[in-house]
Length: 437
Image (tube, rainbow, N blue to C red; front, side, top):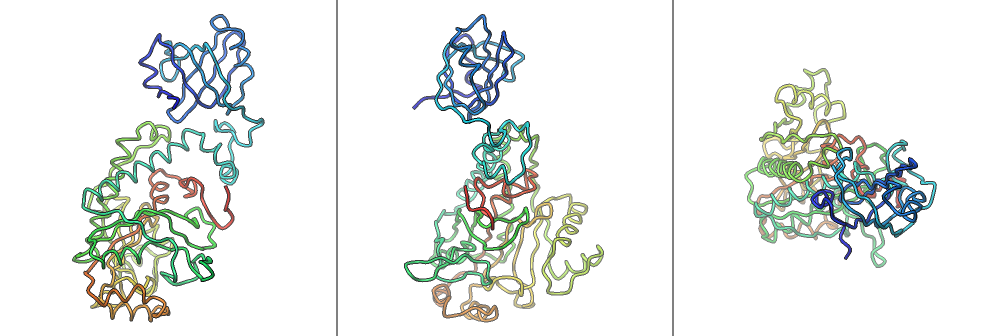
């Protein structure tokens, strides 16, 4: 395999001959001296082409280069204080590996702006931009840090089905598919099978993978396909145990991103502050009184709307100095059948959302582990108890108190990086209009 050294390694080879491959990011033809910015996954390198120091063949090759040509360059490393990395390469040989068509439908240099649809239509060119690549380097570090924390805390990674024989949460927001002539559905969440893993005695598990929502939503907060990291743990005291797991996991992810991705954060001109724990908690029904004092009264048993989330975010920031907070004890009428209700106040559920700067990033809490209650709540939600027997029957045979949550990876990434449209945090996003590339 051909090695392409990183800029930091090349800088140590002053006076030596190196070979580097990549894309032509930009070409500057100034007559007596020309410049090529060569880009690859390791960074950007300046190739300096003085007419007096290179062959006519190399000079002619450079003059014919276009942005996004893929080349291999062999040359001598020399110190150059004016260059971004403190060095330049004087080429002895240039090989064309793949010529790019012209004109480009998108400017990977970012000099010419493009709207989000154009960028996603030509996603491979968009990904060529260092600041776009930085998003996915940081996302990878976030996930790595969160996974490492879960594993160190005794969680087992499991893989749950994406194709279900029934609707897991009710409603019409589900994709139907044909499964050998029988109706099936893409999962809305890896929820139910995580619970069955707990029923099977696995103790603490987490899933990492895609889920789907057939929402005809065109907001910058929604996608039809998204990925989550979703832990589940048994023998909890109540839903607050899941909150402690989640906040520690998020902090671990942010810490790893800060450790690994300084260059990428610099490319985005960002710093990631590590949040303090525990995150503040707001709970229903007290939230209704808080919102009323803030001038936005909600009827009892009503879910939060966008204005409520905005006001509560400002309230928590002002009172607690935190951008993260939990909302607990949602009205049970707005939550799925598997959420445990508060026995003393059954109109409220042990259901928890984590919110960051006004945006819900996760949903979870304590699950109902008692068979009779699960079946009762299925009927209350208007679902078919027979169709969910595959899930409820194991609850007849002893299931411990348990809970968990599902955290949206793209939403977390976009929110932390201040990206307005969550689609930018998905490599190839899917929405109601976008099925390609």
